[in-house]
Amino acid sequence: MHKAIRYFIAIVLAGCVGFSATQTFAQTDYKQQFTIAKKLYTDGKYALAMENFKKLIPYDQNNPYREYASFYYALSAYQQNFKAVAKDMFGQIKTLYPSWDKMDEVNIWLAKIHFDNKDYFQGMKLLREVKSEKAQKEVSYLKKQALVPVTDVETLKMMLEEYPKDEVIGEKLARELSKNQLQPEDQKLLESLISKFDLKKTDYIIETPETIHKDSYTVSVMFPFVVTRIDATTSRKPNQFVLDLYEGMMMAVDTLAKQGIKINVRAYDTERRPEKIKSMLLMNEMKSSDLIVGPLYSEENTMIQEFSMINQINLFNPISNNYELIRQNQYGFLFQPSNETIGSESAKFLANTKRNKKCMVFYGDSKRDSTLAANFVAKAKESGLRILRAERVTKETSRKIIEILATPTEFDEYKYPVQFTLRKDSLGSVFVASDDPLIYSKVISCVETRKDSVTIVGSENWLDQSAVDYSKYESLGIKLYAPNFSADNNPAYRSFQRKFVKEHGRNSSASAYSNYAKVGYDFMLFAGNALKKHGVYFQDALRKSKQVPGYLAGGYDFTEGRSNTYVPFIEFRNGKLTEIQRSY
Image 1 (tube, rainbow, N blue to C red):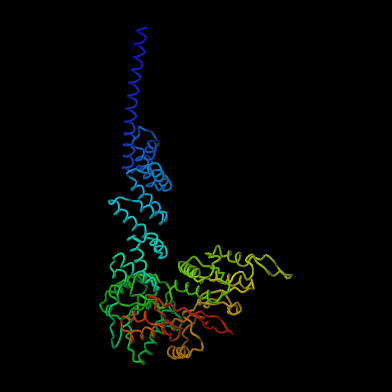
Image 2: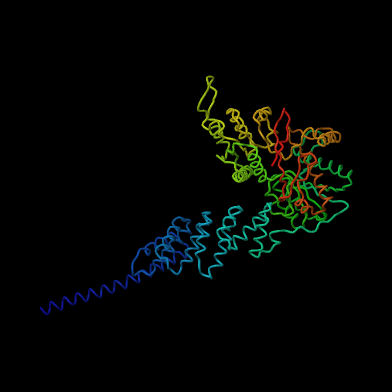
């Protein structure tokens, strides 16, 4: 019996020793596994690291590595671009271990994932939870990097409203505002941001040098004349619009001279070659320019804009509507309204002329079309128009226009449609933000089929294309935004036409509507008079002036920025194009 008891005790003791050894081994195993997994992560073997960290994540009271294993599991997933997996694991850490001392790092990584997904507001919310003073530098850097692609002023305004004391958001909003042509309220906002966040004013608002008045002014014209490719015949040249534009400008110089305004024009042929432009800008004489006119193509733009900005020389693009060309250059101007302005003004026009406020928008797949459409929609909502649909149309999807506007549901006895899915008179207007005949001709055809009171607003550029007969413009009451419109009965326009024919032996334009010689003439008269009245730096005076009357076209307004904001609208009446008088 005594022997049996001793044997039992020996077995129990052996078991206890075995249990103790197993426990010690398990603890050692956790440490070893974490060390191995961490080494795999450090070596960039993220898939293997995930597998090894995964074993350490489940709960075990003897495992001190659960939080760290979860954290590095998430990092390994992120490094492999498994951002959803990483996001879920970081979220799990916040739920299971809310008091973990590394929670600031978790919030920073979660914010980064949200920023990667363009969920900026959620990312900002998470960064607000970061408490460590040491981490604030990293937080600030992450915000700055995350907000780099955010250029929409309204989005940044909403962010600042949510986080009114955030210096990174305040500085970013100020930076984006400084790139735009500002309405008075935005100008005040920019100035308040500069004051509130103690920003360097000259980084955001370039103060124009004191103007200089001269007896004569030098205008440098940088156009792609490409003279080496021009033949000596009287036939129209491939770049005829460039030649017409310049000839119109030179006619205006002659007119200005008779008025006592001396303009010296220096013409430079860019040849559409960057290396040629670079060599011209190195010439000392370029720095003596009082005004630069050009360039006409986007690929020529960057170097000339930089030259204008560095040397503080005002620059005008006479034909483009693309504000991006001059956005970064406080000395850059568009003679034409920007696409942003055209979109906004078209919405205001419809809001003030149509009783039926329901509207649709159709636009093409170009950036220009998207800009027009987006600004139309934004201003439309602000002005009381109700946007039923804004539809992007491509060549492959153009059938959508017919499906939306002219799908018949009822027919008369002659099989003509009398009712549609979109019921008659349920729509007030359509804004077509495209010059693509495939798009606007389909819209016009559909409205003609509907035979109701829908008003179409489009571009004066349509008139140069033969996609739609002019008679339909009048019968359907189509309205066109037309910054370059000149009435046929305008005495100044008639005089210009006679003078051009006399000097050049041909009409000023072979196009049905566009007339670059007229644009050049009007621009140079405008610029020459601005120089004479206000000196080299005429922008402050233009900003304070009311609308400047046009010479051949309707007028110009630079009170709100660096592009012309005057946009007239025209329609056919009794077979003649006529400007629509507005009361607002």
